[in-house]
Image 1 (cartoon, helix red, strand yellow):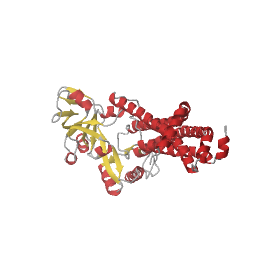
Image 2 (cartoon, rainbow, N blue to C red):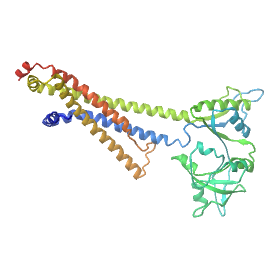
Image 3 (cartoon, rainbow, N blue to C red):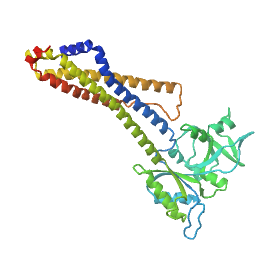
Image 4 (cartoon, one colour):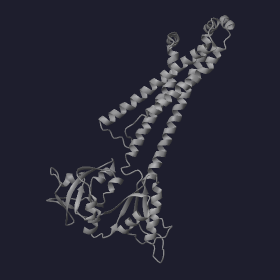
Length: 415
């Protein structure tokens, strides 16, 4: 049951000392406000950096380089050439690998032609598995499929830059493009996913079936590089080490030759980024909790003053039969009201500011470097507010206990 008299009394007490209550509550308000804003800004920075990862978060990329030491009678400086047989060996020997996408790139200076138009583009041979490693948005038509690979079909999937330079105002699906004297049927168009310089470079790519590129441009049985992802629950580092070890054995490379094969572990980079933002979140909590703690101390001090000012009133209450529990609950309730209200206003203000920034960035398509769309984790904010109320109760506990111990006779003589 709600005690209307008690709430009215708390309201009158707060109203009587408006400035003192406001200044006391400001410390609590500022702590919660800082917590929400700092965590929201940290999440925005995290979103911006993570959006730069326009590949699978657990992907591993492997390519060949030159050996750095002699081995089994073979000289150092030897270039390693991966093959289709290596891909088959990885599939059969390393069960931890979920996806493997071998690819090649057409080298040298050349132009791609369509009717009277021509321009330079990056031409890459890929497999259907590429979409599981590097998300790509198919705008029209289709991507390379398994039948294209098995039948070595001369088909192509083109990006925005090719559309702009060769097919302006023309539907490219069903048209042929000339790549170094060989004609490829355009079966689809794509748009790269991501932002920054990577998306600009990806928009210049023309995808061909890897088998067709190998056969047409004299790269028989050659693989330039490969992208892999592990099965669920398997760390990317596991398949990175196993694949490189297998390739070293197949190509007679010294086991400790670290330069023969290059690799990039996206999962490790992503974990490093996550660790960085975990540290940022921890720092935000530390700063905010410090401000909140200072506010709580202020509330406790003010409640001690309140008890001192109301000593005679408390004495009258006890003389009329008020129990120590009722005195304690009155003081604690007032402390909770101050801290809870201040924390709630801080939560709303901080959330509103983050929501305003998010709205403006989305509406005006603002790009702030690595800073992405900020977010507020309401679960954390609400938890902080609940803890704040509990802490407020503890802050009022000492003054309330002191009030409960007031001797009515002494209190009634108090001036």
